Image (cartoon, rainbow, N blue to C red):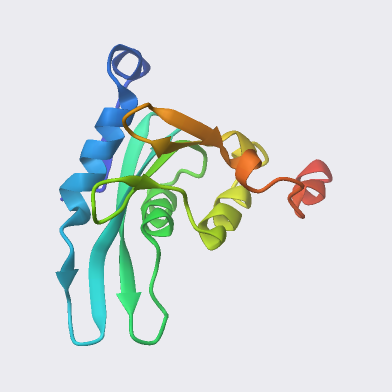
Length: 149
């Protein structure tokens, strides 16, 4: 499976990008038991980068809590492929509904780039309601480090 999918800006403008991201996340979700200690795919995520690429990931839950959320897994794929700027994020729960990233994922995304607060997160698939990351993590503690960089 190819970890990235490139969408030209023209393509992004002519399609419902949220449908595309949702679909890409659902393709990899496939909840499964890996071993008596690890389950994967209860949640899936897709991110669209500023460069127009889509990266996906699934949650990996372990008995020792050393797992990884789907959003951080998708971000790891993005970083592995040389990118670090996110435009949009969707997280799909096991029941098919979208959800907001957990606190750890919010913090992880904020630390990526000085403009990460503008990342758009889908919070309701049917209405296409979104929220900006800075609304979920206001008065973020690390802003000054970017200001001084």
